[in-house]
Structure formats: C-alpha cells, structure tokens
Image (cartoon, rainbow, N blue to C red; front, side, top):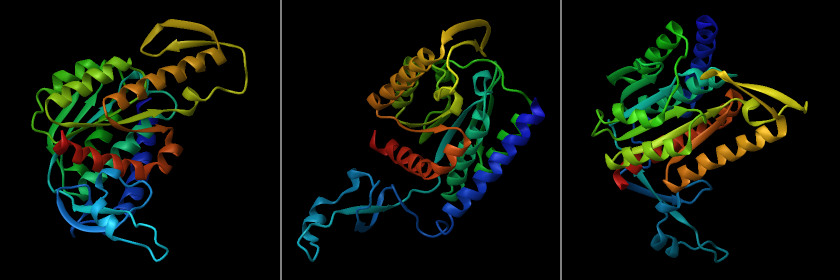
Length: 295
C-alpha cells in the first residue's frame, strides 16, 4: 500500500509544483503585491478583491467618462519572512479515493507559495500516536519531508482536532496555521481548534479535502453497507439517498461553524477539482497571513 500511495503523492506534488511555479513566476525577489502592511499603490477593483481594501475616498474622486464611479482598492507590500505552521492530516480517514493526493497537492501548493515569499515553515504530519513535527524548515525541504514520510508509512490512527491544541500550544508567536484535513470531524472540533489559535493571536486557514464519491451519490440506488475506516467494526446499512442527505447536512454544519468563527477555508473535492481551485489557495495563504495582524 505504501508504494501505491507514494507514487500518487509524488505525482500530485510534482503537478502542484508545476502549477504554482508558473502562477508565482515573477513575484519574487521583486516587490510583492498582495495583502500586507506597507501601502504601495491603488488600482481599480476586480471581482474577487477583498472589500476591506476598498479606498472609498479615492473611489469618490475617480469618475469614468460616462459618469460612474471607479471603485479603487489599495495594494500593499507583502511582509517577508514570517513563520507559518502547516498541519497535514495523514490518518486512516484520509486513505479513501484520491484524498491523499488532493491533500498533497494542496500542501505542496501552500508550501510553494511560502517559498515564493520567503517564509519559514513548521511542519506537523498527524498519523497514529506519533506525529512528525519539524521546526524552522525551508518550504521546499518541508515538501520533501512530507513525501518521505508518506513513502515510508501508511496512514494510520484517527484524528481529534481538539487534541491538536497540545501541539499548537508549543508553537506560540507563529504568524499563521494551515490545516489540511477532511470532513471526518465533529463541527465542535473545528470551533475548539479555531478558538485556541485565536487566543494565541495567530490566524487559521483550512483546506478541506474530499473525494467525489463521498459527496456525490452513485447513479445506482438502493441500500448500501458503509464501513467506518477509523472503526472497522462499525457497519451501517442505509438507503443511499438518505446517507448522502446526512453527509450534506454534516458538511454544511462544518462550513457554518467556520463562517461563524470567521475562518477562511478552501474545499477541494478530489484532485481534478483541486487543479481548478489553485488560485483560491493563493488567496487563502495571503488572507490568513494578513489576518494575524488584524486579530
């Protein structure tokens, strides 16, 4: 099994490196425009820009020839060299469909962005009772460490997000935390983790991965037997439509908690979906990096 996961993870990581190197090309070492703290310029608003950066006074002075206002947003110089924490869920619930490849694609993407802006990374890989924890890594070294860990061991154990706080406590004064996990958690777990990180005056960004069959019912109807991969003894017989209704409700509850806690997140339903949401990862990294200063 290790070989199967290893080959797919390496392929997903190479793909992410290619995608994000082209997206970030030309960004460094010159001045970087993005959410930061040194104001450098004004430009016209584009769909997707954060409304918090609209300069209403400047907008009032900018009139189009037809008489309409031009909405102007501020651009900032992105702060360099901050310490971020990447947390990768590598437990049993992730070993389903293409969730691990999707997670590695997201992790490699985030670390590629970190490398482009000169950030330092602490990496936590959660598996079983002995997580892999390394401090002060170059982002490229963090990518290699993650792949080496995956290629040496199978995913194992289960993850309770409330227990991550024990590791988080040791990482004070970090700018931002990024968690890559799936939906196999109670909503209260996300709330507890977000609250703890907020009290440390750090920011949290989340990547939620799933595989298509988890959220989209198959065309064949009827009753199915579902097995809990974290508790193999637990089996459930349920009508397929009712099962996916409950899945949708569970996902919506988690998203509602993240919205309530003002936590930015990106959801990726499989590797193909992740490819088209790579720009969202860049936005997630930038906004989470900035949010720390706004807490």
